[in-house]
Structure formats: C-alpha cells, structure tokens
Image 1 (tube, rainbow, N blue to C red):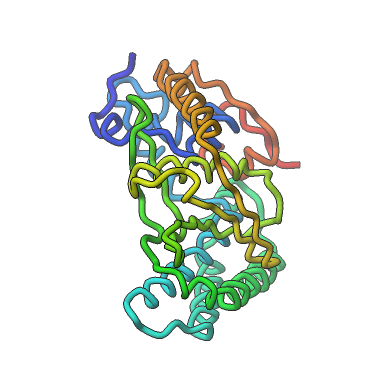
Image 2: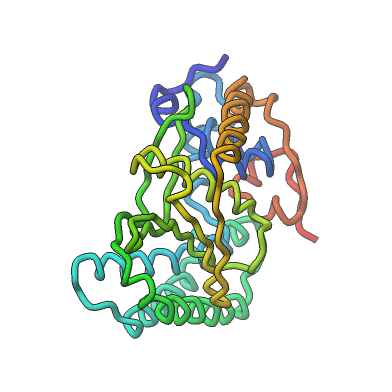
Length: 286
C-alpha cells in the first residue's frame, strides 16, 4: 500500500463530483484524488500532478464563471446591497476576454493540443448572458425567501463515511419548509444524474436543519431556458442513496495502487482530461 500524506485521509470523503469522476474513469479518479498525496515511489511526480490539476475543461470554466457571478450577486443581496444585472454582464464579459489571453495555461483541451476557435468565446459570451438574464428574471421569486446558505461546502456522515455537499442556494419558504436550488448552465436534461446529487443535498439538510424529508424540496433551474425541475424525496429513497454511498466509497478506497484504477479511454473524455499527458491510455484527437 502506498505511503500517503495524512492530508489525504483528512479530506477523503464521498461527493457527487467524486462519484461522477469514479464512474467516468477510475484512472482519472486516481490522478485527481490520490496521486497528489503519494509519498513513496509515485507513478507520476506529485508535483506534476498538482500542476496539471490547475487546468480546467473549457466547458467547466464557462459554467463556473456564471456560478461565481451569481454567487457574488446573491451575497450582495444578503448584505442588503443592490444587485446589478449590468454589473454581472460586465463582469462576465471581462472574464471571457481574460480567458482568451490565458487559454494556453487554463484550458485542458488547449493543453492537450486542441485549438480553441473564436466561436467558442462567442458562444460562451452568448450563453453566459442568457443565463444571467434568466437568473435576474427569476430572482424576485427567490428574494421572497430567507437565504440560509449559498455556495458553501458542508460535510456530514453516512455511517462511517464522510460526505461533502455544496448547495447553490437554500431558501426558507414562508411556511418554514426549505427549497434547495441548483443552478444549471447546460442543457435541460438529466444526463448528469441530477437526482442523485439532489438526494445527497436532502440527506445533508435533514441532519443540518433537523427537518423531515417531506419539509425539504429541491429544484434544478436551467438558466439557458428558464425551465425548473423539482425533486422531492421520501425516506425510503434516501435509504437507497445511503446504501449506494457506503459501498461505492469503500470501492474508491479498497486500494491506492495505480494498477487498480483502470482507464476508460475515449477521445472526447481524454481530450478534456487534465491528466491526458501522463496517462498511457489516452485517446488522441482525430
């Protein structure tokens, strides 16, 4: 068993993000969450891994920029400062322009040899503006709710397994129930196992706020179209989630040996993987 830095064990928890990476490619999971902390005979220099972790897929970046700006605007609301659509749009445009100048040291795809066409930035600007217009159009509805938390990392336990969640917005309704909101900047579909993500939020909220599941609602808000999709969970469904989390996390930690994390290579996934250059199973573009 490799010798791992104690920091790994202090921060080793299940999360929806880890679940997605684990099921997409165990090799990517190894590089992302284990390799930076290997202290004895590492397969790849941990310093190299930590450097590669600084890269981000262009598709993740455009969604994250929107989330960050929305979070800043919500924080202004919580501090009783005015929210500003013009300021949000201006900030977004500046960030898009900035990414143009640093794409080579920012985007995973660029680092992996793919040119970033001008059309990407044009589309990014248009999509971001649409998302921000939609958010501000919907905000009066959310302003009526008491904002309890937004974009904060929280942890809780499922048995002996630590779990991390980060809810975009938690609003307390006039009747005392909670509504947990997740802003989506992509397509109006459930391709990202959104139900699992929202159920994990409810598991945490039940414990944190000491409320039953039927007093905690969740929703996805698709900012490109304004569509809202609600999710409600019964205790039986949450038990099923617990029964999934514990063995999956055990499988993630059954071994820390490199060879026990096989790659699932595909051209599209490999091109967006920040660890492509150190993986011997990478699929080359075109």
